[in-house]
Length: 254
Ligand SMILES: NC(=O)c1ccc[n+]([C@@H]2O[C@H](COP(=O)([O-])OP(=O)(O)OC[C@H]3O[C@@H](n4cnc5c(N)ncnc54)[C@H](O)[C@@H]3O)[C@@H](O)[C@H]2O)c1
Image 1 (cartoon, protein in one colour):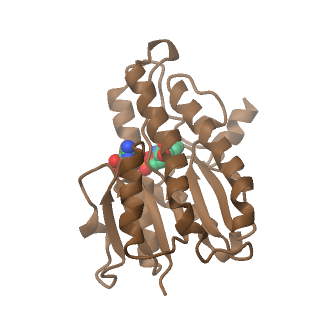
Image 2 (tube, rainbow, N blue to C red):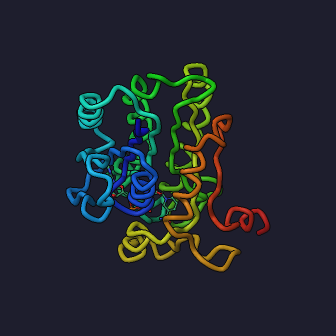
């Protein structure tokens, strides 16, 4: 039977590419996203009818997440993997952030993964064992590893989810759920384009080109998420793995 993955933020960027890759590999995918633009046409290979589902969901809203998980539970009692990719960035200096910007980033980037994992847990635990655990992958950021001027509150939310990944990893391990985080450097997605176009802080720039001489592509991150979902990673738990072409290491060098 096809394994089931739930991907928050599945309408765009890293989440969307991960959804496409998993469907192509035979998974059933539930994409949860606040966007009304379901990526159905582009994402579902013609030979995979019925294996891509789209649910409009605000991950910062408990009722919305509960409804989305209930819609999934109507179709299946098992979730094999949950990828928390939904995220928002509002570049600004710490002094100038508005309450609305801060509440938005806290809600989507921190409360969102916490709520999504919490609500999905009964289905994640079904059929999971410590030998063959269910997988959770949270999309963090290298910005959460070192303070970054111009997007400080965003970076703080990403540091927070790195911590959530570690604590969840320990708290859930004995029930057969492992939790890891990927920490991308700059990846070519609509988020970065919009952040650069709309920035209110003149000091904001994306982390930019990595030591490998390019920025990341959504596939670079999807590759690593698929590794975390693979049999090879069944004993990997509580890690934060930079996927950044060496950007974090360059931070250290500086
Ligand atoms: N692109 C980068 O350079 C980069 C770097 C590091 C980390 N990240 C992280 O990667 C993840 C994916 O970002 P991306 O670059 O693919 O951006 P993106 O904007 O292409 O995708 C983010 C998705 O999240 C959805 N979303 C936003 N608010 C939501 C909400 N309240 N409920 C449900 N869905 C919501 C959006 O509609 C969008 O589809 C984010 O968590 C982001 O912080 C991105």
